[in-house]
Image (cartoon, rainbow, N blue to C red; front, side, top):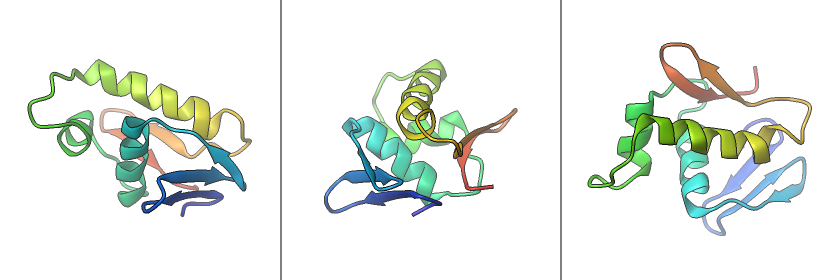
Length: 96
């Protein structure tokens, strides 16, 4: 749980401000990885190695696309933004 965002690993449900948010499996995995590393920036390479299969043919630009999908669902409908870009490092999620 971070701020009003909660993620349930058992049911694969995500809620923000008590509102259920539907995520794809990959979006859920990406959000889980960001939340497990809350407050710390993670690079695109770290995201690729922890969220995608080792042999997946994924490019760093694909990470930007998935981050934008998450922002659309997790941040855009709400006043407080949780997903942040850390210039030169990657992305992080926190309530600051």
